[in-house]
Amino acid sequence: MNWARSPAVVRAPATSANLGPGFDAFGLALGMYDQVEARVAAGGLAVEVFGEGEETAGAGERHLVVRAMRAAFDAMGGQPAGLVLRCTNGIPHGRGLGSSAAAVVSGILAARALMADGADRLPDTEVLRLAVDLEGHPDNVAACLAGGLTVAWHPAVTDGCTDSVADLVGVARAADVVRGRRPAGLPVRLLRFDVLAGITAVACVAPGAMATHEARAALPASVPHADAAANAARSALLLAALISDPSVLFDATEDYLHQRYRAAAMPATADLLARLRGAGVAAVMSGAGPSVLALGLADAQPGLADAQPGLRDGPPGPAAGRAGLRDGPASTYGQPGLAVVDSIARETGIAWRVTPLKVDRQGATVQPGGPGEPPPEAARQGRSANQDAEPGVHPTGGSTQGRVTNSATHGPQSRECRGLLWC
Image 1 (cartoon, one colour):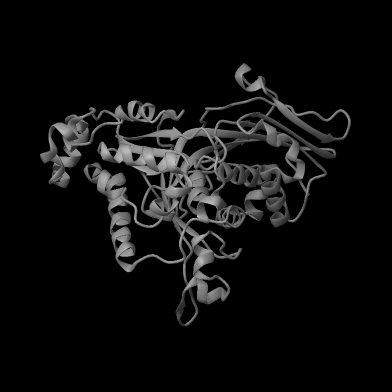
Image 2: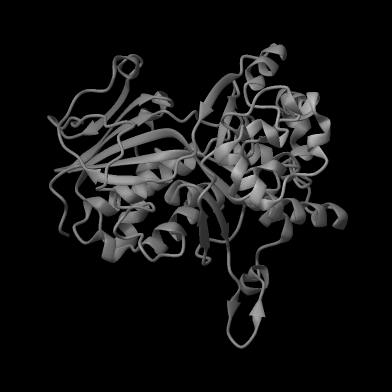
């Protein structure tokens, strides 16, 4: 195999899946990042972790980034003699912000970059399929790869007729699909959309973690037809709200499929969600929780929805909406403003970490790496390392956290991405 001599540096954004009604389909990339620097070594495995999840450095081959790299190497036809990884994590683990998707995407893209002809051996469509197989569902990995707003789905296969995915594989029961246990190897597609420039987010990061499989265990195998119909309408409305008319964001984020069923498993999340929506904030459970995500317009003023309730009765027409984003205050839409989120979160008495976030519009990026500056002091404190390598093999390279360059090899600005489905 022809391995790259220089390290590869991957930066992957956080993501919020579902966004209320878009269950297992919608994903939004957010401006919070993990970074992985990887290089081929003469032998062994060395993993170093800074920041979030530092305790995972000792996992060795079980580390999710390593597992994703191994799967990608297998798909490309060979494994390197040794690996050295340096992970600088900014995405909280187990909070519903796509930390596992970022790890999976980072591992796959790092492995592809370390093989000289990796892009030919593992094209973008296969990157997506492999990431979905490892993650179990497509919403987070799609947004992590492409940036912006994504809609992901498993297409039906046509061969004289059109079959459902479940009929095609013959083994995927409805309950398994609900809980994210789809068979591996199914085709997957995504579409990427540019979110309106005025829309921003605030994440209320939960103080404790919850495993996705625990949150999925609370879901029923079926829901009433009326709820499914209402949810379908809200999903369509959500797409319109995020790319065209933000005046309908509050109604568009109403969910009928999963949040109410998960409430008992995460009462603090349900309480904050109810408080925010009671104040008119377009708030949703972020992914499977327990964090909460609020969406709105960056310059909306707090309290306007209560002061002028008539504004909620009928949004302006498309032309007026567009003009309002450019020329008028965003608060004319009757949104209560994201400034109220922090105060409402504090009223709960729970230590929510309220974090304003921009929408990431680039997705995961890859760039050549090399020796550089050590991680910032905050990351160096609490550093954890797993050294299972040959003597003298140590992680090298530096953090480029937050840096965006035109040398990206994935995402909407990349050479490979031009002309693909999600660009």
